[in-house]
Image (cartoon, rainbow, N blue to C red):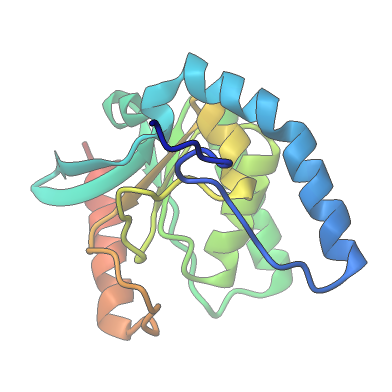
Length: 187
């Protein structure tokens, strides 16, 4: 006799602690069929690819790897010392370059780099993001990156292996990510 199961393999169960969480999960469940259709239409954008070598560095990747082949890639690097006004000037500059055809490349470490990344995502512009947090075989783009991945405008590269606990970013890690970003931008 075959053993019947109630849930599909990999199902998602959670204990909800309040009603606002319940509303969020209801919206998530209502959106499941659409997300599944997107994944089926573009399965390669949602599958982790390990061992991808770019500019001499090995990465794990999620998203549109063809962005790496784009002829114009621009490194996003902003000093932590920028004022709010200077950050907005950098955001405007990088968005203008992306609208003219550049693919932005950023580790989104500083507040200015994070502002550029958020603005690029919101403006539906192409972006390669270097994350210090590695992937495992079950990793997928977070909710804020899902639509950009589905549209082929986003690539996440992770140079280091997945760890269950996030370690604080060190200065050395930040400098290394900036060097990697520069190398990818120069391809």
